[in-house]
Image (cartoon, rainbow, N blue to C red):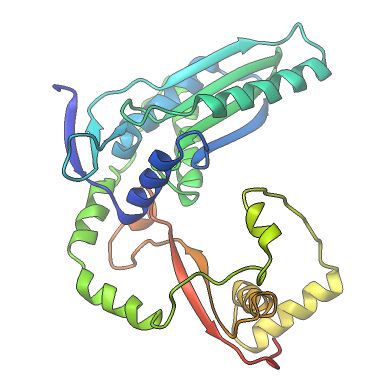
Length: 310
């Protein structure tokens, strides 16, 4: 207990993620994993120091989560934690063997997941392929942070790495802790927010179906797949021109297309879908540099008629 320096409630998005984790702990849906190849004369000691410095700077990276025997789930900040590192030497393997071993490593890493009671909910792996070539794997739980934070953290890691390589100390301005965002949330008018969304979603009792009355689809809804389409240069230019003329964004156009498709496939003229937003409040000074989970998924309601075009 001497190592615990703070505890406070979760944000609504954190509560939702924790619920889904507890409901289906084997799904791994909130396990974040990034891997890349590093080439060059890597100073491994300095690299590890840089990542540990980042852990020491940001409270959310030293946070665990507790919910048992508690009235509300809590996030608990530890004063000191050591980042878990995995180091392996694969130089004796050929390229195909290294690729196969990487796929197996990434799969095992995801299956291992994290114990939410034990910080840090983040780990790194350095897998050596050649004297000057490595796979680097960075894994963490989504409860800690969103995609916005990746660039902030990596920029700090590179700065600390450069300083460590030169045997210098680096002093960065102290960051705002994630707790400040939780306190900001607690100052908001929750009743007004509830009324706003009740008015916006009045009349909705069920989600918009993706395909109307298709029982075979419903029975297979856990199957995921992905398709990619590249737009031509000409079509892209026309879309960008459309956006500029109407003072919109490509995201707005995309949501309009999605709304029409949902209406056509569902057979409904009043539809709703979720849109992810960054969720960082502009009236919280320094919010753009806070490491933590801010994203939110908001319902978008669109009413269409059968003959509406984009």
